[in-house]
Amino acid sequence: MKYFATLLFFTLLSCSKSVTQDDLQHLNGYWDIEMVESESKKITKFGINSTIDYYYLDNSNKGFRKKTKPDFSGKYRANNIKDSITISSKNGQFTIHTSTSLDNWDDIIIELSADKLILQNDKGVLFHYKKHEKYNF
Image 1 (cartoon, rainbow, N blue to C red):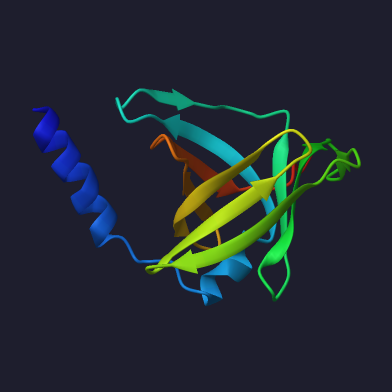
Image 2 (image 1 turned 180 degrees about the vertical axis):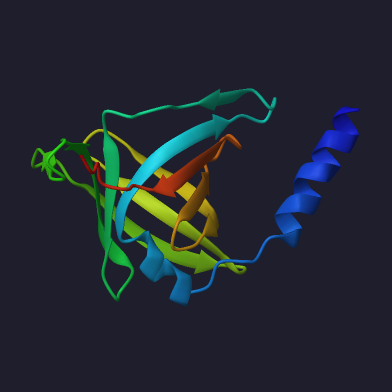
């Protein structure tokens, strides 16, 4: 059964559209985490999040990520902490290299579109995001 689940996972990944350089423009903006999925298929779903990830990427594939807090007026509050990011391509895969004052890590971009982002860390954990929609009251 475990073999079947692994095979199914990689089959689904191979059927998905691969990320291109042009797709990287979609990374810019606010992203809301929907769920986290581990290799053991344990899924953690998120409802309304108090923090939203904001990504900025320039034409040279360098930029930053920061945590923001949306408010009910449609604005975002953030502190001055920015995680530096660079994106590289190897063997047809794009990897986000993140650097902070405390740590460095890499995430592979599994899927990226105007409204969907899936990242995979070095432990195989998948992070599913959707483009954040401002609160409208």
